[in-house]
Structure formats: C-alpha cells, structure tokens
Image (tube, rainbow over all chains, first blue to last red; front, side):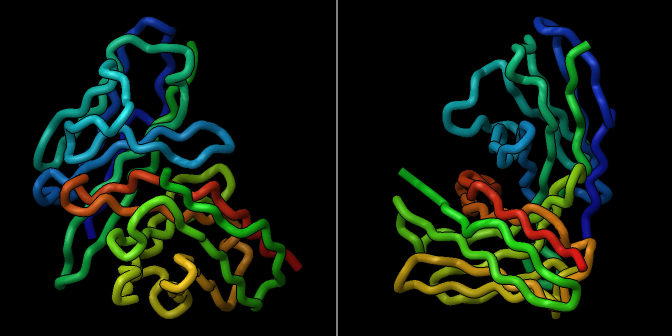
Length: 112
Length: 121
C-alpha cells in the first residue's frame, strides 16, 4: 500500500502570496495518477488537479500541479481569500490486481 | 447535471449496523465506478472502497474488508454502504464520490453532500 505524506501540516500565508504544497509517496505512483482536492469546512472535497498536472473543469489557472514518481506539488500562484482551506492529495495504484486509493493527511492553508 | 444525493444523518449504538445511501442522477449510472470515503471529526479523508455499478464488483480498502459491504440498485441508480459492528471510531461523515476512470486520472470528480453517522451509547 502506498502511503502519502503531505507537508507542511499547516501553511500560513497572506492573500496575494504564492503557496507551494508538497505530497510525497512511499513508492512510485503509477502513471502519475495523483490528484489534489480542496475542502472547506462543512463541505465535500472538490477536485482541483488530476494526473498530477491537469486542472479539473472550472478550476482557475492560478492552481497548478507538478511532479512525478514520488514527489508532487500543488502551487497556488496568487492566493485569493477563498483559497484558504484544507488540501488533500490522493493516489491510485494496484496491488495484487486490486485497485487501491489512498489520501494524504492534508495541509491546512490558513490566513496569516 | 450530475447529482449525488445521500441519505440523512444517523445515530446508532455500538455493535449495531448502519446503511448509507447515495442516489445518482444526471449521467450514465453504470458507466462510472463509485467510491466511498469517510472523514472522522477534525480528521482527514479515508478511502473505504470502490464499486462498479455495472457488475456490482467491489474492491475494499484492507482496513474495511469484512466489516463493510457496498452494493447498488441499478433500477433506482442508488448505491449503498453498510457498516456493521459499529464502534465509536466509526463516527464520521461518509461520502460517495464518482470515479473519473483513466480519462480523469482515476480521481473523484463529483461528491455527495456527506452523511454524518454518530455512534454513541
């Protein structure tokens, strides 16, 4: 089972600044099937990025994903007030012919 | 438009079972696998498993194998997750989420609103 470790646990920044969030996998993520989600309090998660770097429908271009293999990043180029939330990475892999998915523990992006 | 509407909140005793439903609409129901994900209060997301609505086949996360059952009803486009032998640490919000398939990088693009299950004596 692939474990995902996100860092930092909490990131304190101001609107207008650039945010860089990290997600590290314990093994290579096959085909870079790594996704990022945003979750605000009391809401369901929202898909931002899939396949490591492809923005989901309707996601602003200030969100970008990068990386490959075991190291991935989510970058928010210029923070808007609505971007302060918790972010999760998620990977898809196969083990013994079974599909398995795992989430990272999350990074909280808070207003400084 | 795609909609996933889940059943209402539940309060159950330890040792009981609970079933949460997720009614899908606005897309070809058999064509998309469905995840179940839960989130304990103040905690992160935890993947429980995935079901193929077309054939009913299921893959469970190792932690939930044996205590969780995922099913579907193709006549009503509804999915179900049953958790048995409930413990206090099963208290969580349970989400259904549609899988995108390979074209979407095996991610989850639409989510239900969540169902709070509280386990308390």
